[in-house]
View (spheres, rainbow, N blue to C red):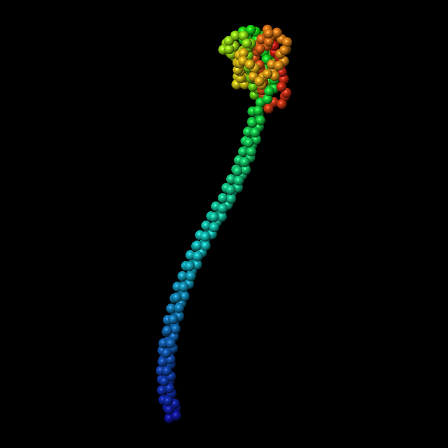
Length: 254
């Protein structure tokens, strides 16, 4: 080996050692500089992960609340729908009730009209002195009257008994009632409901003003005996609800 080569060899060794020493120092420096950055990056990454987990948890809670809210909204909507259905049903029932009330009012009006009675027929039956039984002619006349009213619903009979003016007041009152009862019994035996017959005995009392017209046909020239015979009678007045037929009169005299 010549001197030049030896110089080169020996001269390069320090340089290499210097470079090697310098490289190690650089790595330590870089490592020292990077370590804090890595620490900050790790801390930031940890914080970011925690924040992300928190946000994820918050989002989950929000979604859960939204789900609960949606369920409540659906429940409220269902309740509102049921309430609307109930309201519609209530309105329908109210309309039905109004219709029923209107029908009831119409029925009541019709019943009120039906309860208004009109005189449809009248007659009288005369009796012998101090007598209260019906003769065959009287029964035949009553049969004709009964046949006339068979087609009339809820007919009502009014029987008013009278006597002549001979005898005491109390006795004549009882006699006039017995005469009315004789007519009542005959009507009931031949199908007239008992509830539809009303009787009263007036004896020898004066004829009520509303009945005077039924006594006017008596002959003003009649004898006292004839007047007494005509006074001994039962006046029969027949009423029917809302009857439109004109009143008919029949004289059933013995």
